[in-house]
Image (tube, rainbow, N blue to C red; front, side):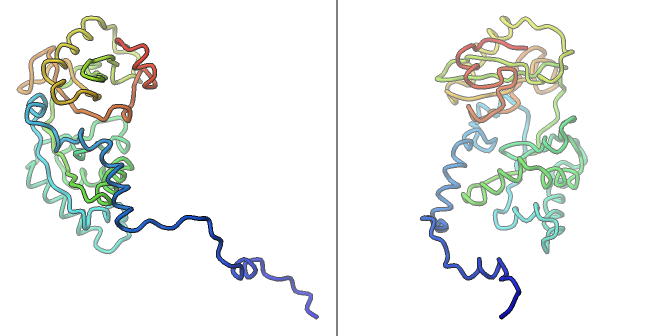
Length: 264
C-alpha cells in the first residue's frame, strides 16, 4: 500500500470534459461578429469621409494596410516582423519625404503611446514604432482584419494650433447639443465666450456637416492654421462615433444630452 498522495493535476485531467453549453464560433460567425463591432465606428473613419467633409480638414494621404500581414506588427518576436515594419516605414518615407506629418490610422491615432505630445514625425520608423506599440491601433487593426474591412495609415499635413483652441462637439439627430474644450486636463488655458463659440460651431455644423452626419462627435480647431484655414474659423480635425468617444468635460453622455451647452 502506497503512502503517496494522488497528483491533483492527474485527477483533474482524468475528469470528462465539462459541457458549458457553448462552442467556439465558426470562421463565418467570428467574421460576422467583427463586422458588427467594426460597423459601430466605420462611418467616422477618414477613408469614409465624403469629399465635402474632407475639404473642411487638412490634406491627408492614405496608405492601405495588408490584412494578411498587418497584425504581425504587434508581435515583435514573430518571424518576418522587421520586414513588415520596414515595408510600411519605407512607404511612409517615400510618401512624406522628410516633411513632418501627423501620424494616425484611418480610425484612430496612437496617442496612447505618446500621451503628452502629438504624433508628428518625418520618420517612417518612428511612425511604425508608435502604431505597433499602441493598444488603440492594435484594437482597430485586429477588428479590421477579423471583419475583412480596409484600414489605412493616414498621413496628415501638420497645422498650426492655438493653445486651448480645440473643441469637441456633440451632435444628435441633426442638431448640435454640446461643446467641450478638448484639452480638459489643462486648467491654465484662460476663459472663453462659451455662448459665442457654441453659436458659431452650431451654425457651422448645420451648414457643413449635418447633411452628412446627423449624429456624430467632431473635433475642430479655432485659431491660426496658415494655408489650411482662416483665423478664428473652424478647421475640422476629425469625426468620431457618437457614444463611443471621450465626452471630455461632460464626463458622460447622459450629461451631454441632459445638460448640453458649452463647457471649458
